[in-house]
Amino acid sequence: MLYGKDMSVTPGQQLRAYVDYLRDMGVYDLYRSDSPRMVVSEEVLATLRTEVGRSLAAKEVRPAPSATVAATPTAEPVRSVPFARPIAAAPAPRSASDLSGTPNPSDAPFIDLMPKPLSFDQLAPLPATRVAPDGKAAALEAVRGDIGDCTRCPLAYAGRHSIVFADGDPKASLMFVGEGPGADEDASGLPFVGKAGQLLNNMIAAMGVAREQVYIANIVKCRPPRNRTPEPVEANTCSQFLLRQIDIVQPKVIVALGATAATYLLGVKQSLASLRGVWHEARGAKVAVTYHPAFLLRDPRQKGEAWKDLQRVMAELGLQPPRKG
Image (cartoon, rainbow, N blue to C red; front, side):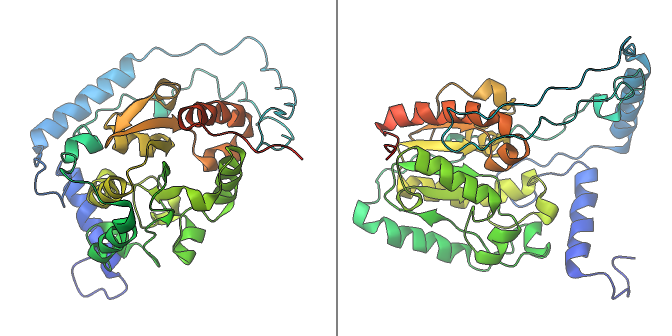
């Protein structure tokens, strides 16, 4: 009982249940006055459920493999990647039972009722006047002041301890944008200070610059529960502040760390593989897309690919890796 006298239910749980209820009803972007409301009737929902059931019933069943899947050999360290460490072994392969003909729930057709994300260029026009270098620090402080003790989205009621604004040089030419704070960041109030942050520091150092010379921020400034992916209502609510940060810093290059950062910066829903290796644009800056450091910790074999992305950024900015002494 969420709205009765059950005092064991916290206000955060009440709000979360309310947001989930509205989302189930087809209402999205609750906190954006310029976003259309989409209400789906019970009749439409019943039709959608029927179509999903038919699609699942008609889905072709994959045949079971005739032989046991061979074990993946131990991977060798990526010696050419400055921030890579030796890899003990590749993740265990999927077993034959995983590849059997049993339908996988994750293979079910996905009916996307969410509105297409808007790129940062679509959210607002570029400012007519730019902040002078000497005024950037003060302008960023003003943005932080506008955020205040933010309660604009459900993340404010989900156990947040700190609003993680940003870190680095307000005059930086290079900016990194991640997904959202983790537990270490929530405790310290600074982005990328945990294990993923240590790897990001190594990546930045390998490019020939120091962390203090770049600017680092996230799509959302509050930690999502259990480090889950920010939901659209949360990311859309927080985007206005990151947009202002980018307009003030005016970086030449933005590195989008992971699919979530790329989705909201660029306004696209595409695979990371399709976004990597080409230049994009947001707020007058060139945007390169690469893997999130947290993903690289889970799959170190991709560090070599991430290093290729960073080398393209280095060439664009004229950076040189530090000489080995």
